[in-house]
Every structure is written in C-alpha cells, then in structure tokens.
Length: 457
Ligand code: PLP
Image 1 (cartoon, protein in one colour):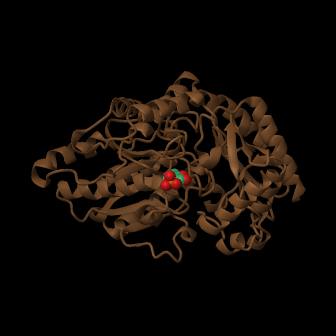
Image 2: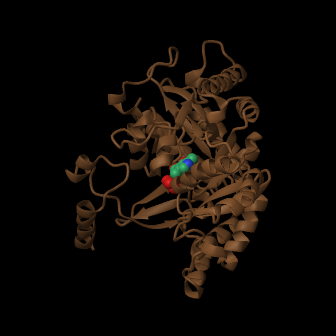
Image 3: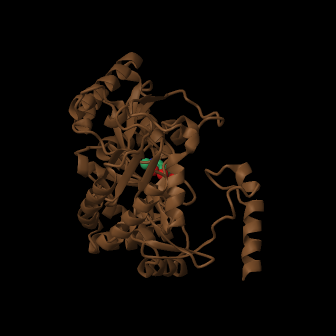
C-alpha cells in the first residue's frame, strides 16, 4: 500500500502540471507530497492515509450537496449506460438537457430565454463576452464592445475571462490581452471607504466612479458590466448597502448589459437560489457553473436573457447560424448530474439551509473572531464567510505579506482537520462549506478555526 502511494506521489510530481502551485517548491518537495484524496462523505474528505478533513470550502465553493451523494452518482451512471454522449449542435438534444434547460430558465431571475452550455465558469464567461459582441453587432452598434469588470473580481482564467478577472497576479506574465476590458473599483467598504463614509455613501461613490469611467470611454463603446453578486475569490465580500441599486441605475442609463457571474452564488449559497435575487439584481446574462452539478460533472451555463436572445434570433436571417459551441456543450451526463443535483437542492431546500445555518455561522464568526486583535473584519452572507487579518486594527494596517498570516492560519486549520482557504488577495481566511452543513458541523468548523487563529497570535 505504502509503495503504491509513494509511486502515485512520484508519478504526480513527475507528470501533473498543478494549477495555482509554486512549481519549483513542489518539484523540490518543499510543499511536501501531493495530498492523494480518495473518498468523500457529507462535508468530509479522506486522503489515502486515512486522514479525514472537514471541507470548509466545498472543494472550490462547488460541492454544495456534499460528497458521496449516491443519487447523483446513480443518475450519472444511468445516463452513461443509456447514452454517454451525443452533441447538441444543429438541434440535437437529450431529454435530460431539455428538462434541465427548461428548469434553469424558469428558476433564474428576470426574463431568461435560453441556456448555452460549457464545461467551466471560465468558458461560460468567455461565451458571455462573445454574446455581448454578437448582440451589439446584430443591433448595429459595432463599437459597443468594451466590458467593465471590477478590481478583485474573479471571472476565470481563460483568455477573455482571465482579462476580466481583476487581480493582476492572475494574468501577470501570461500576456492576456487588456484591450477592451476595463476595471472599476472593488465594492469593499472596509478597505475602500474614506474616513466616516457610510456604506451607502461609499456605494454611491463607486457607482459615480463607474459612470465617470463610462463617460471617459464614451458610453457608445461600453457593451457590458460583469460582476459577482458577492465578490468571491477577491475576498468573499458582500456588497455594501445600496451598491447594486446604484450600479444598475448607471448601467440602465447607458444601455449597458449586466452579466451576473453567479458561478459561486448560484443555487443557494447566499440563502437565495441566486445571488441576483438576494440583492435585487436584474441581469441580462447569468453565468452558472460549480453548484449547477455540485462539481459531480464539469458543466457550466451562460443563461441568456430575452432582450439579448430576441436580437440574436431576429438577426439569424442576416448572419446565418449561431456559430459558437463546444463538442461537450450540453453533455448528457452533465445534464443528468445537474438534474439530480437540482432535485436535491429543491427537496432539501438548500437555499433555506444556507439561510438558517448560514445566519448561525455568520453570528458565530462575528462572536468568536471580530474582537481579536489581529482581525480587521469578519464578513459574509449565507454559507460563505471570511476573516480578514490586519497588523493594526486601529489604523487598518496590513500585515507584511512576507509573514503570510492568512496562509499560516489556513495551514494551522488544516493540521487540525479543517480546510479553510487562504484567499489569494490579502490575509483572508475564507469559508464556503457545502450547503448541507448542519449547525453542529458549523460548531466544529468554528472551533477548529478559532484554535488555528489563536495559534498564530
Ligand atoms: N466566475 C467565478 C465567480 C468564479 O468563482 C470562478 C471560479 O472560481 C470562475 C468564474 C471560473 O470558473 P472555472 O474555474 O470553472 O473556470
């Protein structure tokens, strides 16, 4: 057994190019052996040595229904036996795909028309950019193409989605094209507000800055604004009061499409089925992935609103077929997985659980961490939360990055049996447990996190 595990570790080290990994440290063994994850049940995973870890981050905010759901595995298996694959080009479909699409269009906020499928959040956002350009070409506005995203927004790491991501370390040294993608300020009151500025005043200022950017560039050149309802990878930051209302006023004024990137917030994480519903957002286009299948199969969707779709359909006589699609668009196994996952989301009322258990979670985070001398802010909504560490609470001074405080806390949590993520932007410990997490499991998560935080104080 051990020899086998050693061989697996060696094969991995020799052959896998791991995402978001310091390659030299991994090659030299400084990061230790790869963790060989073998099984999962509920909110726990187990490695090949039998060590159990509570997954306080649901993989990458995605295993919402928890691990080991046999009903999803069976749906996948049934579909694989029946029909493992057929494409969805030129009006081919499967029952699972049609049922899923009808369901998504009905459950999504606003007037949605159609769903285009991909395999990841990144490619779905790539599709959204193409839809914005296509839509404006078809309605005779060929200059209205630029896309505005936000600093600290995360939208993926393919070419266009990576450019939309507002954290430079995700595109440094990769030469992503910057032309046509603009960034506006992050909606984070704690770091962005001026002295004495209320959340609402700050939101109004951010919306004003967005308008200034639009006017500087010329509104006739701005096609869309893309944003996560709750800033995710950029620090798990719920929007400040009034933010979405103010931003949407500006977008409507200049006829700019709104893409809600619901890759994390879709399917219950905030306590509402979509983050858009939670915050009164009326998107024209919605991106979903992760929770759509709870990561049991790679599947994403670009949900297209009526306003955009009508223009596409009307333009078809002039431009011919909609020439965009992947071999795996609408994969039947993915659709079967998504239908089984959405059955669980509905039957077990996971948005309701995220709301109820989430309220308890947020209260516990505040109670246990908000007053600690190294904690600047505790924040979150539903079952996503963050603790941000600072060197000086009074003056809001960050720790020297070389101290890696966030990473050290995350490591300490892990050694105590809890996965909580050191977020890539600042010293932030992030949580996004599966949406099936119980109150008792929250107690376990919070107790381990508290011990980990205290260990670095
Ligand atoms: N959009 C958001 C909001 C995300 O959080 C992510 C991934 O974390 C993506 C897009 C990209 O998704 P993927 O990693 O599946 O390409």
